[in-house]
Length: 280
Image (cartoon, rainbow, N blue to C red; front, side, top):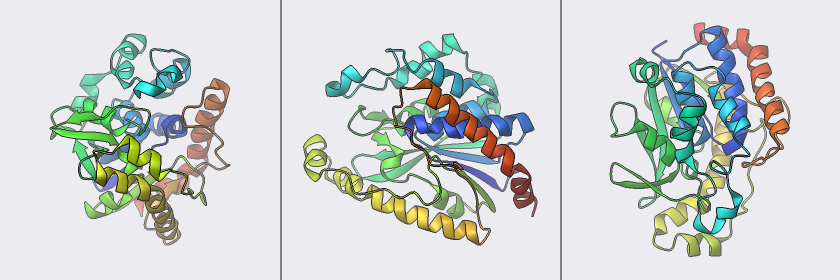
């Protein structure tokens, strides 16, 4: 389906919800012409494109307690989340089918934030130097992760500048846009960031500071627009059917399992409606 684009919101371990949805899609053989992902969404996307049902969820749930992956003791060095683990040790635990991923005709874009410019940058498979490094950059959460350089650009989490990149899909001319969210409809973010902490942490990046201070307001505007577009049938959204009370670094694996199942079940319940939208 060349004119279709799948948009994946981030949310760190809340992304397990999206992984449940994507696994249901894989069961049904549903693939899109393009996938664009932010943060955890970009990491889930590579396993969807490689057609490895269950891989994302298996690693995130079964390796959550592995200190090589998540180690809260490393807060001061901003290395709590070791994204290299996903592309190194995790490959031994659950091998990644890089051949299927590379040869896939599905267009794939990972969204990161250019720290110098405070704006989103869209890294595309086959057009950037290393799409896997771009996925790490896309998922490098501010304050707890180090910046990652891709193609000479120092980057952090794409969610800092474009949490749900449906506008990119519209601007690229996609006729059918499906969004998988990791927060329930109606959710809005508060302004919970301290200007002092932002300035102190990123004093050498004034445009990134501006970006971080505005990101929640931008997200709320995106939510408003998505709900309007969904109302008029311009996009199709899959969102958690109940309130998501899951921390971005959730350590309770039973909570993560339940969230994964919720994503799978929500996808199942709206699947026929989704097909009708895609075929209309």
